[in-house]
Image (tube, rainbow, N blue to C red; front, side, top):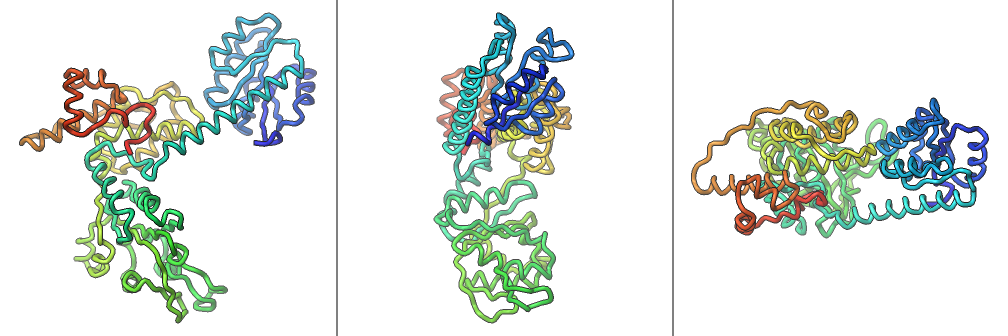
Length: 462
């Protein structure tokens, strides 16, 4: 980051000192404030990296209460910001209080500009090093299946299928309800494939009018129809060498299905209004939230096209069937949106956990994401509550269990839930399950489970 792009907020109510400090830091991108309200306004508007703040602010500049309150609110809104507090001579007690609240450093008046510049410059350097470390840490932890929480047996099975299918070029059909993460899995197929360096091109067959979809897919020649003022390359050609993702293919018009079938068989296309066959090397992944057998029976989808796109079919379970993975995904999303909104929330309250586990989630993962996004904005305390999520804790559904196989599934599920609630802490998980640590270790070996993926540092199981 170059120095001109370094944003510094100076919070000082003394006009003379404020003017001096602005002159001192003229090489930085400086914004100023004189009280808490204007400081928070500037913080929201400019998102400064470093804040230089006087502790004595109006309406009571002789005290430090308003300054400490400003510091607290600043760090709540922007927890990574480096705040240097400026205190009166010999006022080390209040300076230490500010450090305890999260201030990066303090400086005692009278102001020596050279020393203060060193402190501010160091704060910028530390911030940039930490930001780079977070970026590198994200890259280290990132995998082609990042964001896909596979704490349930059903999702573990899906991820294993993705890993097996990805290196091949077989046309794959993803089946699942809206909001279950079909495009996320399609992108994982692409990133794990030899085509990862090529384009991933997605098109929603239900979102484009029928009369435009053919042109969108295959492109068109100049003058082929009214408004075709130039030659346009379609999505299929753009995806050449990469992956083409046809979302909601069950809504593709029958008139276009024959042309798609020909492309899948011959791997050549013709642009609308063109006569030249164009060879295209592309891997095709399709998805739909409809039951193929139903739309085929209703003559809304060609059976021969279905068998062509479903060389491999992957069924994605709805979120309501992923009990063991709910809290892990919820915590991952909470961390994601806390960073985006610059909120320092600690987690979920007990009633929020109960609500997440009890709710049926008709909108699947998309609904969970939307609720957590809103909760991060609305939460007043350190924990997100059921009220913040807009949910009410409900009664747990009691499953009817019988036979050895079902019992084993229930046992495995109970262990996963206990690990989830305890963040992978073996002692706490064993206590929740009412067993000893050695017994839990035996069960982990029996079901090929590991506590590592459930720890606070882990963002996903895969």
